[in-house]
Length: 234
Length: 223
Image (cartoon, rainbow over all chains, first blue to last red; front, top):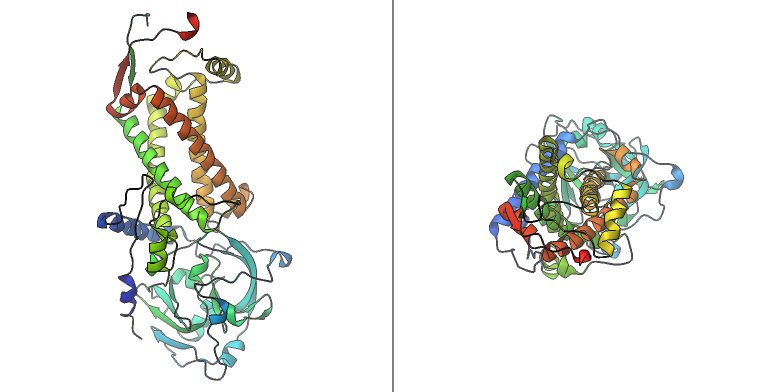
């Protein structure tokens, strides 16, 4: 897999036209951009340090779960990729022992657990939903992933890409979610599955996953390349 | 102090540095916070983009598909460290030097009422370097508001890692509302604070250069 193409997006990392309260434009100040990016890296380290590997996100009652879950993406739901059951394959790369691709049928046969947790968006809104699927750590075990590596990355059919730290990947509530509100995950919510991480902001929960890779090199993220903080834990 | 003496206001370097660092951090936090608020408003209004911090919205949309919230968050999560450090520095310095005890106390409902009535009827005596009780209460209010901003801010930033904190605020949305309410309190404080500094510019000189003097002015109510 080509990790290098991610660098294209890295070049677009810019703080844009920063305008102070006084109206003076400081966007041209390279030093401001660099300083903010540096603090963001520092915040990654702080968040990794305060992350509790076994600290559970709050869970809620069945009747608190929202059935008509909010749709959220940078494109409309009509443009969601429709992945065909016959041709879809989940592929693997990086430090994984068994890289044989998986079909949807095989993925759907995996044992599932359910969780009713809260999705918190970086914009500030939040919503409780019910997701069901296999804990990612169990699946990583099945495919012989090297869990001593530092990161797990995801490639998605809609052009999205994300990556998380290994402690979060191994967190008991991090799921490969095949169901939302007890129904097979609808197309617009990421069929065949989304990575559901109640300890991360919403944008760290990729949908339409087609590739999982394990690496020691910090994976890029779609929104991280647009200036958002990488770790984005909650 | 006899009537002929000069009024003197002095601020040691530690007080001035922490004061101005807090001021800078709070301005950055308010500007970026308003941009973040606009991304998902709690109430039925948005802040005008011109007074928010996070770059040109149209440029950011064209470049990143994002209304400048990424920049606003980067500012917010950088300035929060500056505020936390300068705030704890200020509080610690005030406790150690006894400045709180000397200049910010005593306060109490009766003393407050006395000075409040005097201020409302334009009979409050202004002495450079001495805080009246209304002022003292306002400073305590501002310091308390910053503490509430830091606590509610942590609850919003890390609602899973610090879940009990969120519960104290009545949930995630409760923490957001508390964060908004104390932001409003701080903005009101700043408006009054700056208005009074404009009325008594010597206080600005003292807070910047460390020392200012004034000839005591005639008491308006005593004529």
